[in-house]
Image 1 (cartoon, rainbow, N blue to C red):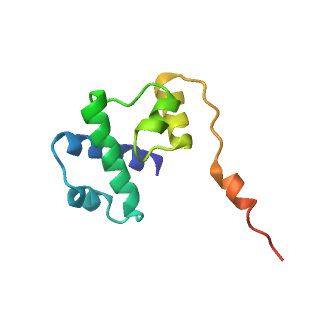
Image 2: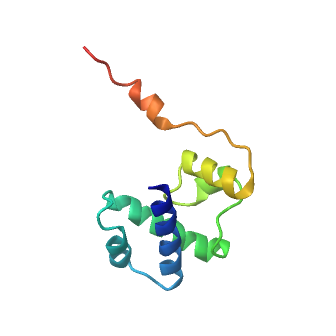
Length: 103
């Protein structure tokens, strides 16, 4: 699944450079659900293309703050892998699972 999401990210960035619409991105995203993610990914790709020369910021703090659709976990993972930045990455599911109680 990670490879598919990575591939879709590349496709969306390419489509952004070509002036893709949200309908074209949603067609690419079809079957994955959560279409709001596709919308945020497109907005992030558009901003990366326009303001960063089609590149993402090279540190997690700036990436999370400035690129729509990229949160703390994704920014940390991307910057750790792509830029070698040592960023702690904590999965939010652990925190969310503590919110549930079982009787």
